[in-house]
Amino acid sequence: MSLINGVSTEMTSDSDQVIPEASDSYVSTPYIDAIVERALMYLHSGYPVHIAGPSGTGKTTLAFHLAALWGQPVTLIHGNAEFDTSDLIGSDNSGFNRSKLVDNYIHSVVKTQEEMRKVWVDNRLTTACRNGDTLLYDEFNRSRPETNNVLLSVLSEGILNLPGLRSAGEGYLTVSPNFRAIFTSNPEEYAGTHKTQDALMDRLITLRLDHPDRNTELKVICAKSGLEEKEATYVVDTVRELRSYHDHQVRPSLRAGIAIARILHQAGHKPRCGDHFFHHVCYDVLSMETAKIQHESCSVFNKMVNQIIAQVCPPLSVKTNRSKQGGASSTKKTLTTQVKKVMGDT
Ligand SMILES: Nc1ncnc2c1ncn2[C@@H]1O[C@H](COP(=O)(O)OP(=O)(O)OP(=O)(O)O)[C@@H](O)[C@H]1O
Image (cartoon, rainbow, N blue to C red; front, side, top):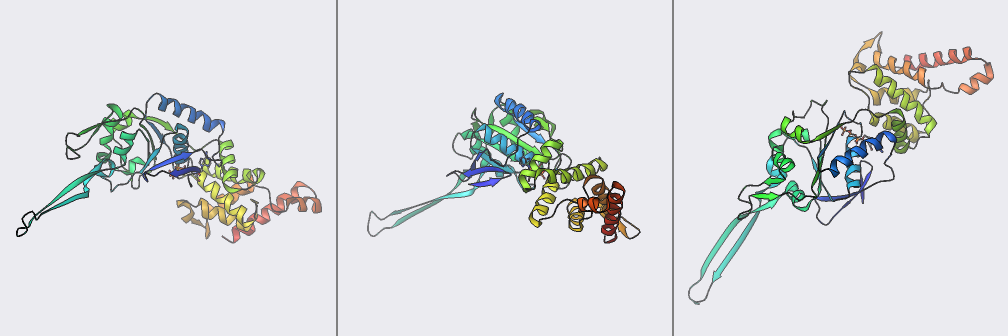
């Protein structure tokens, strides 16, 4: 048993199949349940589902969860620019059949006949279509469109077109009625991806996944990091605030929030304004292109992170300062000093 994206999976004797099971670490919230309910309805109606969205929004995790709920064995394919059609359907280049006949019926005569034949070996898509598995094609737009063309007839006519070479008379395979497909892709990604043909997109029902709502983000970060909910709230709000600043640029994902919370939990630190370690973890994990821009020998990005932390997180030892010196003004003063101290170090 192993975990893929928070979903337990078990390899079957056919090593190309996995049986996913719903995992305890999978977080369900009303936001996620609503998407799952719709996606399952589309699968029940016989349609392939496509989960599209920016990086780190939980597409793969959701795809595995759906596959687990669907309950059929899963054939997993990761999109790859190097793939050609044979990587999906199979080829006759993978196996050979060698036979040798030695005829020594007349003891003084030996007749030897050797024959070598290529043997067709099915690849994952063919196996999934035949067995009625759930095909989980992760980041399918990393494969070239011409490679994915073979899916067009599978998804609309229920026929997999195979070269006649496969074995006598088997040029076409009728797709099992139990076959279902779940695709994921990141349409915003331009590195290493390909534009998908309209004909394929037209056959898929696309669910667009954006960064989740605050409640979902909080629950996932708590579940994945071990940080208690109150502390995780500060991390979530820091990440979400930064995300809103960079509405049309690179935005920190759910994955970034999990990383910050997990590191803090491991290191025994809390998300506090003025905590040197916390500020630096945020610079490192949330770092983006603007981090390179400097103003007065200080990174503009780091300054922005400091401002957000000062708005969102409580200052270090705020209780002690309050009780010793009393009043909000002294707290504000301490906070400003702490932020300046940290910013001075950057
Ligand atoms: N419902 C959930 N329950 C628990 N963890 C989740 C859930 N949704 C997302 N996560 C976690 O969030 C992180 C990002 O999720 P995931 O890898 O599925 O995103 P993605 O959109 O597929 O990212 P990418 O496009 O970069 O591959 C992972 O650590 C995953 O375990």
